[in-house]
Amino acid sequence: MSREIIIAAAQMGPNLREAPREATVVRMIALLNKAAARGAQFVVFPELALTTFFPRWFMEKQSEIDAFFETEMPSPLVEPLFRRAKELGVAFTFGYAEKTLINGRIRRFNTSLMVGVAGDILSRYRKIHLPGHTEHEPWRAFQHLEKRYFEPGEECYSTTTLLGSKFSMAICNDRRWPETYREMALRGAEIATIGYNTPLHYAQTPEHDHLQSFHNHLCMQAGAYQNGLWVIGVGKAGYEDGSWLLGQSCIIAPTGEIVAMTSTVGDEVITAACDPDRCAEIRDNIFNFSRHRRPEMYPFLSMKNETNPTHSYTVSYSKEPSG
Ligand code: CDT
Image 1 (cartoon, protein in one colour):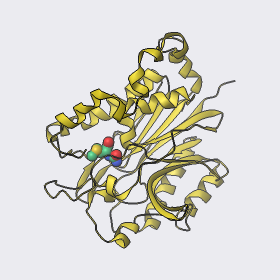
Image 2 (tube, rainbow, N blue to C red):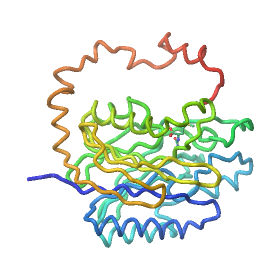
Image 3 (spheres, helix red, strand yellow):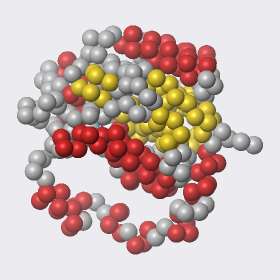
Image 4 (tube, helix red, strand yellow):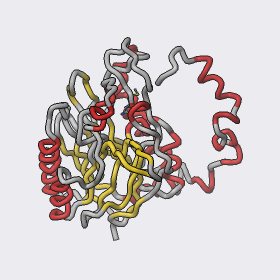
């Protein structure tokens, strides 16, 4: 019996700072309806889907920063999205800024949730690779203060069984790291979901700005192929509060082929029939881990930075302390 799942990537256009969350949720519901009308069983929304990409601003007042965070989920403002998805019998994942209390301490994470067809939260992922910097760097056209506003996630990538397949979540910068896909694949993931907000301008190496789209697809296609899994990469795109964000959201097969891609930088739904059994085309053959992989020959991969002398290159080559 086929395990094929119709998956939708629900790219979002800009969320302007003054846009009320309610209006953003209305747009997300419209995308959900469109996806369901095309037969989608699972819908992937971007990173920080409910707000503008606020790490672009340096803010000192915690109350101003906290205005972008959610303290409960589903919050009353987001509940209509959960309700509509349940009515449609559609599962979904989306990203948001999470403020939570852990052992009496307030913590803030860049988080995504996996929500099942009955509207229940099945799993949570807190972004592991936080890019950017912690201090105000006025020389930049805009800031990238994820390291200031969020703590890195402390839980490893995990898998969630949904619609008869194993899903893993990652968020934006995670997609540039080969370890992300390898860890997921070693855990048996068949479908990776990755929401993103990627500015077209990268302050430290602006000579790479024209390569944003290439690098986006390069890392996700390589991750899909080298690990034999589906990758659903979904951006918040377009001109958001003075910064252009990359679109070209896409659905990538385990062969590394892009099977669907958005063609606007606004709200747009693309769908593809994703058969998890196609992972075997890669995993049983060219990248059969148990037959061909040689973990004993890669000892540095399991070392922490401080025990690996070659990591000193990150210090000597870097002209700026930030990423
Ligand atoms: N949101 C996010 O992680 N964006 C980064 C931008 C480049 S690092 C400043 C990304 O990897 O796409």
